[in-house]
Image 1 (cartoon, rainbow, N blue to C red):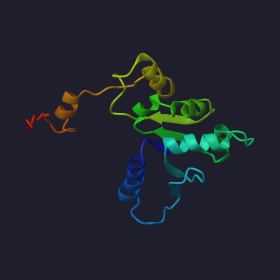
Image 2 (tube, rainbow, N blue to C red):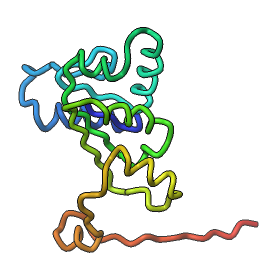
Image 3 (cartoon, rainbow, N blue to C red):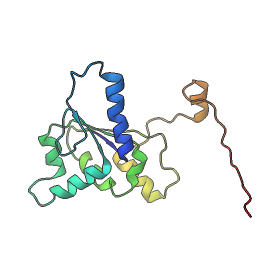
Length: 155
């Protein structure tokens, strides 16, 4: 299961799968519907939150849902967004035995409060590695850039 903060990013995951990994259309065991997961499920944090709320009080839980559907790994894309309400659902995922959780971000929330940063580190774990912008440019993984600010005087 791949979770993203927006529909646009969720759809990018599906598009990249189809563009780069599916030479033919023989593999169709993927979905955008979190309520009916398949081998690959692309969804959003908001959908996971809504699913969790819908399961409350129905003799079910997010943990049982994940286990029943055989979900073995969850990718948290743009994980720096996890300092918000979605954090609670993801902490429940961390309690599931044998579930692998992979957190991805290019921008850890260093500009956040200590409490928000804790909400990021707790589900994601400590940062494993950081790559600086100059290193990315040097390795030709990122082109050099210059930020410009334009000021306009209005009457």
